[in-house]
Image (cartoon, rainbow, N blue to C red; front, top):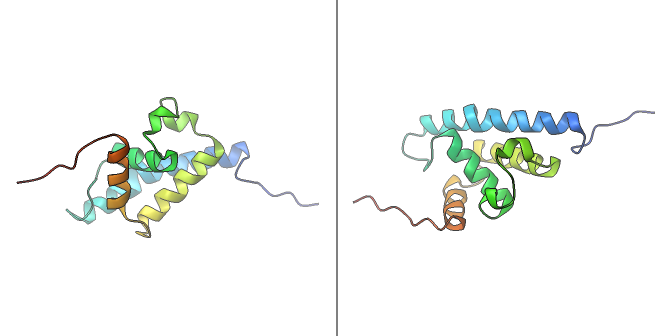
Length: 113
């Protein structure tokens, strides 16, 4: 009988968290650097904020203790990794995700004059 790993197993959970951190710290900032001014965010902590806020549908720290990556449930880790990959492939709008995050945090749009 063959057994298959599910997304809720500990090994897969830690793998998802590690891959999420790789995307947030390395992959997404690298893509953003190549986009020059096209992406509204460029730093690893900003990508984590946007990803976590959007999977929580509120400011992540209202639901997840800090540091978030150590407290993500298997479902949250999987959803966060999936969203990070969607951002990298540009199949979702980083502008929309960032605006939602700022809205949940009650931040006003910054106007550059």
